[in-house]
Image (cartoon, rainbow, N blue to C red):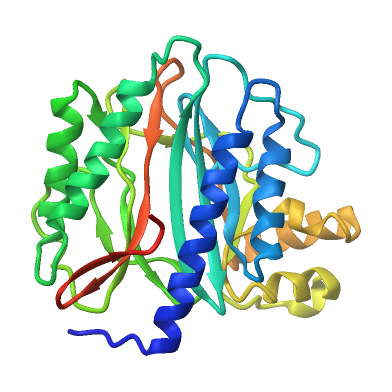
Length: 301
């Protein structure tokens, strides 16, 4: 089925992509030994807002064996260290139209993680080269797997790229990081994010640690039992992912109580950090793009 993007939607995607790219470049300059993770993430989000957009999801920066979803708490004082392999993942939305991009920074003094980062980056380029209307998503994944394994590393097999839709960060199709059968074909008009994860381990992640990223997935059943101010703030994000540090201007106990009650009701999903085994290094590279009849337009170049 062909999806039609009108000019307004397409321009909003493009603008979100330009801002996301600017933020990615800014972040790579700020990620240095001694800098706090929280200052970088908050700086990204401030830059997004200065450009007249909003975060499509909380900015995240995961180090070393942590593959994804590390998001600073309001009190986080962790600092980047020499030798870190640092991912930064950024989402920007303009009127609900989202661009998603990521890169990895090598903080070693001997460039020891550069080949790993290059494997992820090369895999993204190989994947983009396969993208077109009617292409099986497994073919895109096979290009990723072939490139990463050819460089001597493993793709993270239980993390995927994904479709993007208005007010939705993750939608179909899923873009695997390995060649799998099934999964459908790419459609004209689709907006997708491809994000190869390359690692020095076996390529499987698990959830571990405290969640700092949340998302409202359904209306609450017992809204009267919830703090009105907190609920109003959550609902203002229109179902996009949020971070606990978005709510520091509200009563902390009210925030925690509301989050807990919403999670118990099944209305609020928690997204804890995703980790490989300790000692494994993970690199990520990501671009968002629009699939057109005549080719692919990369939004976050």
